[in-house]
Length: 243
Ligand SMILES: [Zn+2]
Image (cartoon, rainbow, N blue to C red):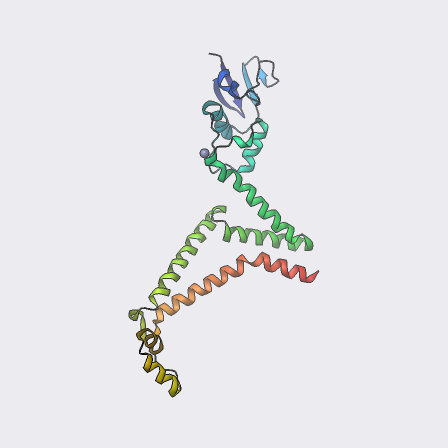
C-alpha cells in the first residue's frame, strides 16, 4: 500500500494514497509527485497550513465524516476548507450548529454596525464597540466566560422571582398590615359579604418583608437587564432623531 507523508505547518502526518484518493476533486485527493508541494528529497508533501485543524481534515478522508471541536472558530475552519477545496456542505450535521453560529454572530454584528454608521466618529466607534460587547455579553451566553456566568445569574433570578411570586400568596409568608386602608362603609360591607378567604387575606395582610425585598431586587435586576439589552435600539432611535 502506497503511503504518503504530509508535513502540515511543521507537523508530520502519514496516510495512504488510497485514503486521499477517496475525494479526488479536493486538493489532497489530486496530489501527485509532480505537485509543487512535493519535496523529492524528503519524499513528503509540505503545506504551510494550520496543523491542528488538519487533524480533522484528514479524519474526513479516513472516515468520510467531517467533524471538528467546538473551540475551532467557524471562520477559521471555512478558510481551511476553502484551501483544501472541500465543500462546506460536507461538515457533519452534528457540527453544523457551531460551524454556522459564527455566521449568525457576524450578521448580528454587521447589523449593529450598520445601525451606528450614520454617526461615526472616533468616540462613537469606541462606544459602538462597547455596546456590541455589552449586547453579546447579555444575549450570547457562549460568547465569553463572563457571559456564561451572567446567564446562570439571570436564570437564578428568574427562578427566585417565580418562587417568591408563588410564596407571596401563601398565608405563611404574609404578615398583618400595620395600617388598614380606610375603606368606605359600602365597600367594607361588600367585603364582609364576600367572605372570600383569599380576598380577606390580601386585604388584611402584606407580603413578608423578606419576600418584598427579594421581589424588588428581582425587579431592579430585570429592569437593568432590559435597559441594557435594548440599548442598541435606544441608540438607533436617538441617532435617527438627530438626523
Ligand atoms: Zn460532529
